[in-house]
Amino acid sequence: MRAKLGLRALIAAGGLLWAAMTPMAYAADDTIKIGVLHSLSGTMAISEATLKDTVLMMVDDLNKKGGLLGKKVEAVVVDPASDWPLFAEKARELIQKDKVAVVFGCWTSVSRKSVLPVFEELNGLLFYPVQYEGEESSKNVFYTGAAPNQQAIPAVDYLMSKDGGEVKRWVLEGTDYVYPQTTNKILKAYLLAKGVPEADVMVNYTPFGFADWQTEVAAIKKFGGAGKKTAVVSTVNGDANVPFYKELANQGIKASDIPVVAFSVGEEELSGFDTKNLVGHLAAWNYFESVKTPENAAFIKQWHTFTKNDKRTTNDPMEATYIGFKMWTQAVEQAGTTNVDAVRQAMYGQKVKNLTGGVAVMNSNHHLSKPVLIGEIQANGQFDTVWQTKGVIKADAWSPYLPEDKGKIADWTFPWACGNCTAPKYKAD
Image (spheres, rainbow, N blue to C red):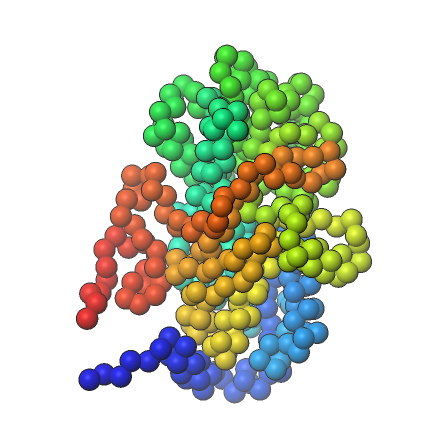
């Protein structure tokens, strides 16, 4: 009869083995390096720079508490400058040259797609903290932002409901790259499955940094004037949001007429807007700064203390970064090593209190279980939560609304060990 070891025992034994196999130069090092891969310049800096500061805050707090595995943690910060090929170059440098144990970074899906082959080739570990289109599950990435069923689908459901205005016509407005294109593909399939006529769905894309919104907003206004309640589902990313919302106001589009629900506009972006004309428009996230919980109050206080600026806002990708960082440190402590393979196995089932009053859980598909919140923009640049799920929702790596995803699973635990399987690789004993 074979003896059966518990998961913790297996992880501990594996951690000791991997530690023994680690080169002496690394074992003797008294510093654990982590990579920070966020744009500090270019069109995405408006969103990403804050996440760099969030990681630095977490590192500072960790070191004040004694570090990790008895070692000091050092953040290696690079600037890929909103340049997608440069993301891959910087990722390779972080892993090969700087010898980082983990990387926290990327915002756009095109940047994540750019670095993915590097992380898989070099067996690096990336924590990706932003809502995205799904349709991916890599053993080298932990996705701590929302999948479509944790943001896009619930937002549409809300707008379809009586409380959300019973919307009948839909404008899917996005920046021209992977995340908006795939998210809108899923949303259109979902809307058609719900009985929405194809003529009542309009899809439009503009480039990164797009500024001349007159024609696009005029088209939205015309589409919304057909006698049916219309809403805009926005996957517009980066600094293009500033002129987009300004033009909505210029053309007199109010939230009561054609509400916009955004997936990439949070408190940080709103801090650069004149928000008086945006009041009533919506955003769907898993966290808002305005949430009243002890955990959130402590996080905001920590943020203001670290930045020495009480006016610095918090936002959803910051919470996702916070959760991912906490889970990674817990997994490292559990495994007793920063070895990627050991940490990966220790990640499954990790739990961290989220900032909205619940518990985030890391699932074996490398995605979190998260709550969903819909918020209305207020004049002060904050969100008033108008709807939220009763509990957390487990992320779907693959969409049930796309025919090509039928039967796909993402489960990186034995006996599956696969992010794109349609049948078991192994049979249980």
